[in-house]
Length: 145
Image (tube, rainbow, N blue to C red; front, side):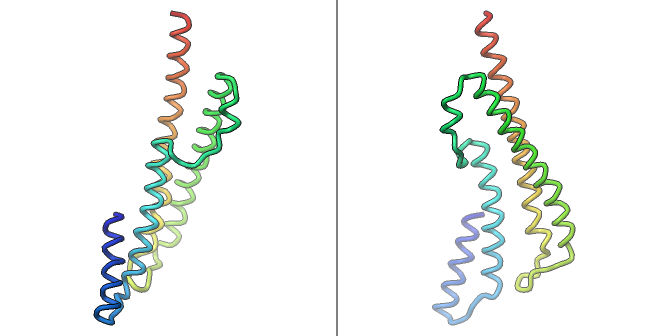
């Protein structure tokens, strides 16, 4: 997706400066690709745990409190991601009849990235909750065994 966006922008620059003709659709298409790339890239960052976060307080907590903080963070994330899915779907449905002028693309196609990425975030969040419980169970097993 990033390569397509770079190609579209490069075509626009070449067309504008070499042929003195602007591709009227290229800016809109590049913007759409950037939106989708940003939302889907954020889900990948969340999955790998490389999203921005402040953990200076959590690192100082005892182990049991760290587990509780991790669960609280995942539960707060699950609420947010559920809101993204529900509200994003409602908004995409609301704008379904509107189209962008240069490309003729329906706005719901662009707005669909919000509920789609929300669903991906939610899956990763639920997997994170399962990892917390799995780690906690493994630690209890090691202590008793």
